[in-house]
Length: 169
Image (cartoon, one colour):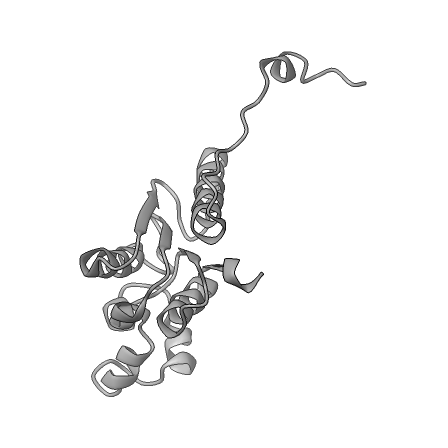
């Protein structure tokens, strides 16, 4: 049972998930959405002033070592978990470059499978129904593949269901 675990998280959950996969190999898949993975580069960009104060403390020039320690991307060489990154292109809370940074580090290291999906027109949350479906399908597909060894495909609607969608039995 414990050999098929996955970790996922969005926003602060993405931050924690990113940190988790740098500290353990127990998870077989990870899906990280809208997180911060390099706190120094996010210092003036995102909307995380309060988080930085209690999570890290100080500024990058007064507390550089802690900014590095709290940045999952700085520990990318320790990741053995296949990782999917999801981010809205218009996210101003945690900028999309954060997922791109960690993704690029993992890709360049080349030890684990990784994928980055950016959702056009989306902010910190995914609001458009089509994008929600893509997010959900891709996340399920990723976790099924790496945590369970299953090549999962989403179901398709039956044409009869569409034709009779107003009918009640």
